[in-house]
Length: 216
Image (cartoon, rainbow, N blue to C red; front, side, top):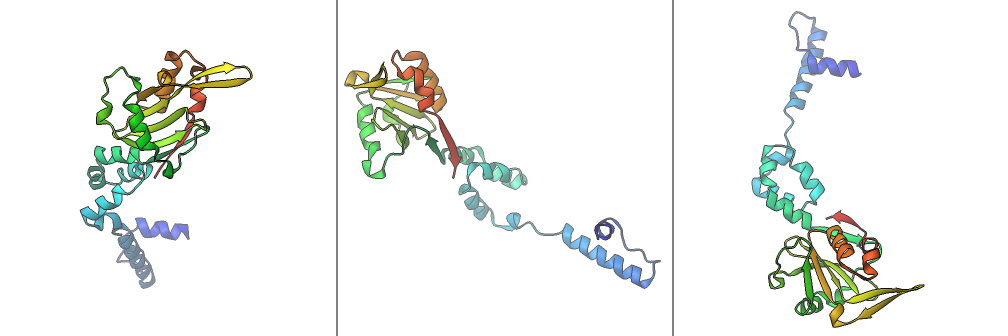
């Protein structure tokens, strides 16, 4: 069967063969012609519909679709890819998702106005220009909150001091212990905290912020 199919794709009909041979070759030629001109459903769609479909796809699918042809490469531009990168969910091993009813975004924005903040890349930051996009996790005591601002920046808000009193971990809440750390990733923030804090949090911050990411 495979040999017959290969014959269909690579051999043209010959006029000097008998009738049965001609019929077989013509049939093979027709099969080849249909397969080689099979329409591409994606490229037959109007451009605005292709754009609408692409905008709803997760990042891994967008990256694959971008390589299909030149039309899709130009439709899926860097702006669309940037938006797709933000459509993701972080699942922490330690931190928990806040309940929607807690309205934690409004509380955080109020807290940030009187909190000392550090940008992990040494840049100036105006919190008035930033809006919380999502809160990804909160520890059970409410001392650590991790989330993201619009525009791709990450934050970790620490509202306590951590001290080890063997065999327990002591947490002290006070206004003086409130710190907001901003960076380009949770991993970068964890590294900054590890190097710049002098309490127990520096020892286990990487463990606390371990996470997995999925796109939607």
